Image 1 (tube, helix red, strand yellow):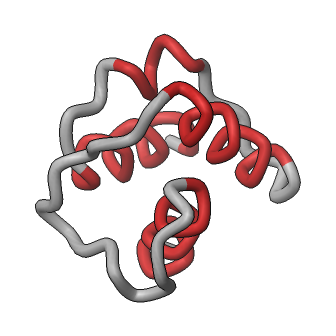
Image 2 (spheres, helix red, strand yellow):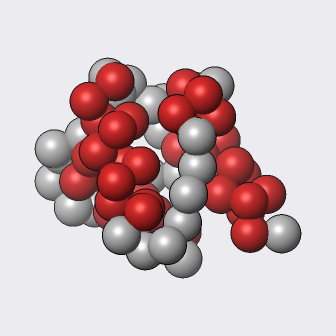
Length: 70
């Protein structure tokens, strides 16, 4: 699942697929956050903008999503 999430983050940031890696800093704006939330919603995964805004790295996003599915 983490590869899929990395690709979704890249898509939300309008970056090339495969350009987002574990440990990367998130340098996304509010549009990318909303886009990422919409992409997750298409996969029946919900997460709050507040939760995502607290994430500083790609690893933080993965941890947030793992906590949601636990």
